[in-house]
View 1 (spheres, one colour):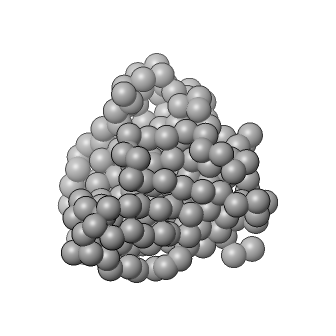
View 2 (cartoon, one colour; view 1 turned 120 degrees about the vertical axis):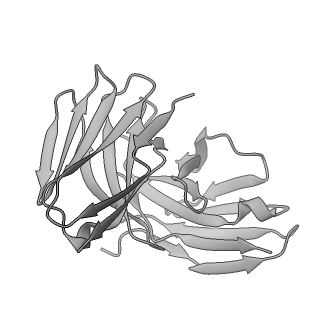
Length: 111
Length: 113
């Protein structure tokens, strides 16, 4: 069974600081996704990574994928309060949009 | 384009009852997937429907069943509700042949008492 693990599970960081969230998965896949979820809300797509070495950036967030290491990272640069949310990575096998989600990282940015 | 819509928004049921949740996919999408998200956890795949057939299924008991209609909308049915079925139920739609582009609906919050 595919396992997707994120760390840390909880992250409290000060505004202006940098940090990285890690996502490890247990089987071969070259499709990985990052989502954001605000409390009580649905999932908002952040990044779609579809090949080894893929790197995408949007504002203060940058995601990368290393399929050989089965690792994706979500890097936060100069955090601001608006980034406080729970972040999920998800992996898709060759079965067509059947996503396996990680445990989630709850991020709190402190002023 | 309204995106993925789900109804109802919230629902409270009693143990042993049955519930039906509904999902309308994003315009043009032919595939609907259902996920269960328990509090504090990541979403878990329940099943996926394409061309009115269940195409894939996650590790959920037969109490969970579904249906897809000719207009691609879908229903999730849960029988003999347990307290542990309390969760946010998310519907996602996509094109079967276009991997990775999956859009999630706002979810239905089910509480079982």
